Amino acid sequence: MKTILITGGAGFIGSHVVRLFVNKYPDYHIVNLDVLTYAGNLENLKDIDTLPNYEFVKGDINDGPFILELFEKYQFDGVLHLAAESHVDRSIADPMAFIMTNIVGTVNLLNGARKIWKSSEGHRFYHISTDEVYGSLGETGLFLETTSYDPHSPYSASKASSDHLVRAYHDTYKLPIVITNCSNNYGPNQFPEKLIPLSIHNISQNKPIPIYGKGENIRDWLYVEDHAAAIDLVFHEGKDGQTYNIGGHNEWTNIALILQLCKTMDKKLGRAEGTSEKLITYVKDRAGHDLRYAIDSTKIQKELGWAPSLQFEEGIEKTVDWYLANPDWLENVSSGAYEKYYEKQYVNR
Ligand code: NAD
Ligand code: TYD
Image (cartoon, rainbow, N blue to C red; front, side, top):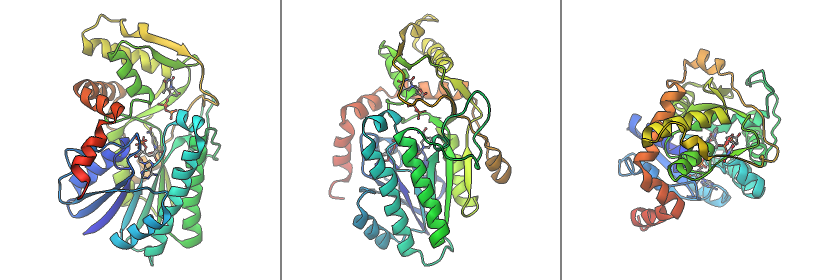
């Protein structure tokens, strides 16, 4: 029996990782630690939250003494760290929350692991990070694991800082760590502030789709379950101290992606082709907007045998189907109704 801590498990990617681990590893005791910010939603885990190998703990990774106590109490064998402030636009509006959670919160967890792990044997601290730490590409080139860090937004600078600290704990204290840097994820359960769920929501409500600048920025999109499968693989088979890049080999300009999404939405909503794209509205560009991200994932493909399983058209269709089938989820996460669900399920437990 292994006791595994997953932080941020009520969020978008974390909920897919928790579901995968709880279902795939009945012998693991999975502890999901999440403070439930606006982005954390226990409805994301409704289907597994009564399983015997799953436990939810509400708590803040910024609270150092609490984190040390938690590590003492549970004696975690491994940590998968996903809790973070994750939205670039919010980091531009309020950098300090990103500094606290993404940097200080990560160090609190590193200290917890360092305190209870007397040797590296049988332990692993897995830090989940982003390709945005590498900065912005021009028209050509790909991010490699060896690419120098060059973050531009407060979000990416905070993630870069946490990556460096995780490596520093490996080099200084021999803490067993592994890091992955992944490209943009999409799929069910993503909070409707990010480009794809926001656009699905707005199209279904006949509201404008805001495109920053000219829509020429490029992102490399990966279906969230493919990311969760990579995380499972790296946690179990990645080499100590290593970094792996994860990406979809799936680059889209924002405008081409939105046109594809509009086409899918017209089909799903029974609207005439071309209806949804009339909602596209060009708005003021994001400050410091990175032009292009694109990942070279040769290392994880060659060393660990991972590859994305879905084509983008398929992934987008699955994503749209999920959002259209779950209008209550959108309503609940936007209105705070999940807090009532939390009170009902977890208070006094
Ligand atoms: P998210 O914003 O959907 O979820 C973050 C979760 O962390 C939420 O459940 C939130 O309640 C929790 N959390 C935030 N602050 C906390 C705190 N102080 N204590 C405890 N819990 C806290 O994020 P996501 O998109 O699922 O991203 C998860 C991780 O993956 C992040 O570390 C992010 O940097 C990384 N990542 C995301 C993407 C992407 O495209 N979304 C791509 C690459 C890497
Ligand atoms: P986002 O989903 O916020 O992810 P990230 O900034 O981490 O890549 O944005 C993806 C791209 O879409 C990015 O180039 C910014 C752009 N964008 C818009 O054009 N309009 C929007 O309303 C949002 C949220 C993003």
